[in-house]
Image 1 (tube, rainbow over the protein chains, first blue to last red):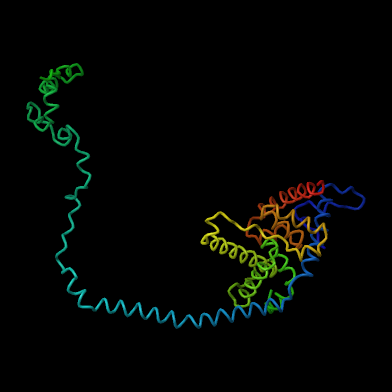
Image 2 (cartoon, helix red, strand yellow; image 1 turned 90 degrees about the vertical axis):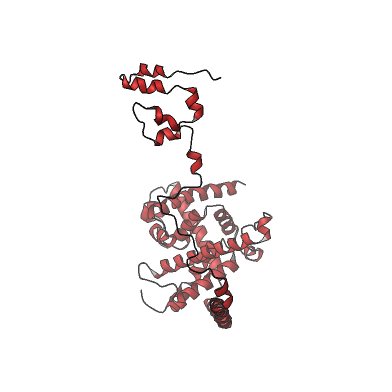
Length: 179
Length: 170
């Protein structure tokens, strides 16, 4: 028997004449003996090659005959599906029920398209963000939500910008008490 | 290596049966099925030997793959049955009473100890100690790197030593 596992530097290869075999070498020897006994028993109980190859050949024949039986069935099924497709494609019913060309709504252009959830993005004061403010005029705030327009005096903001626009200028935005 | 595949299969048949048994956890019927399927693959040319290793190493790799395919197929069938829904999973097949009757205590003990090992460790130990392959050969059969095979080899030996010691103490 060849030395097992000796190529990785342990096992039976370590056993030299006169040297004390280590526990690993002893384990290797025991394992080798046990596996050899196992192999002897299993090989003695192995079925003959002829028996197995005969069984394999029989299986192959059975598979081939099954395939031969199934082939016409598969061909018939394929033909049936093809016929059904042909009948459907040429049937007058499809022609009468088919939608005539040109009745489909034209696809909207990408710039005109709006998502269905667009309204969710419309927050109070949204107009301020999408419109350019005009200096000297309060008309730019015309689109502000009435609630915010009532709450704050936006005139002061524009005056403060004209005077230099410091942070203190924002003090001109005065809160009016709501009636 | 050239030659008649049938003749080569016949020469390697006893060793192939031992390896098939190990791949099927010593389920004899399953091992015979695996071996039949493997022989069919080789003889029909569905598995082709490409001279990249020895014929034996290649054949063992085909047996290992075939056993894994059958195991997967069986699990899929199990999944489809009501038995799986009931949580009943059949236990791993052990040696049949007829085969166990003629076995020595040491062989039976080794086989039971091998059952307790993770499959990779068991496979590597089987290929090295039973089939006389090197660790590199075992790695090629199992389709893993040599380093991984070496790790499984050492861990497997250690686990087997512990299991056998535990059994000896009982």
